[in-house]
Length: 335
Image (tube, rainbow, N blue to C red; front, top):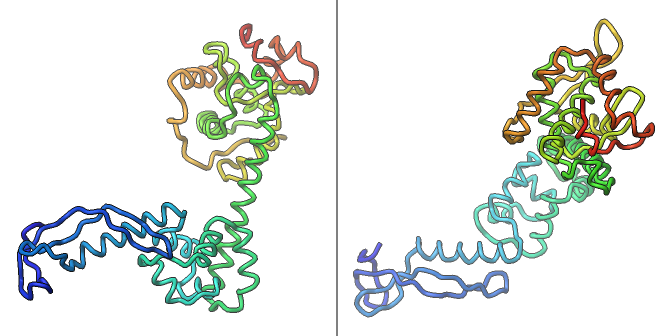
């Protein structure tokens, strides 16, 4: 780009030019923003020359620095927020109570006013705000924008329920403060989910009862070998064997996330797990996979009653009181 020919207003002629790196300050929404810019300069008398490409790039750099320093949404984020709710630019503007021309400018690079920034950020981050705003301004939307908005709000409501269920489960699993009850590992929902997907894909019609025992043996075997559990789950003594603490909430979380389905058996009582998502083997390291494979190998053809009976013989289960947590210290003498 050096030595290019540009018209110089001062020289009144086409001249050769060069590019100079320099520090420049731009005023963006009342704030001085200093950047390292590139300026085209006349090679003859060293006057600054207008270069639309470079000048636009410098201005965009200043805008981007302003957005970063003030946590403003960039043009792509504004567009993604609008499209998240299926709205046209006009519909988005009507919902927000701003001019449609403003939305068009913001999506093509202009920096929003402070009040518009607050609206846009709430639209991206605050589902309750969006619902309240829709109740107020729904009558301003065209039929198609209104229909799409309602569909997206219903989806967001469902996602919110999923997140609340999972967060409640995460909170419950962190109540036990003594690490001997979770295998010295912080509970990992992603590992738990993929472990259940692995079991249900490798063991046909996996019953809920059998699943609970497979989880127990995976965590306790891994603790025996490494001093750490796999999932960070704690286990409670119940009449039908060791069971992950808050296991109903655990299954509800996976159902809400649509990771699994739970289907009743046709010919007898009980339910089994159906995997609905792909397995991510990268969730586990080599030692964890070895333990998981050993558990499947040992118990794949063992029915729920037999694996429950087997778990009743474990010393950790015997020593715990009914409804009490089972200490991982008993993993050392696991059968």
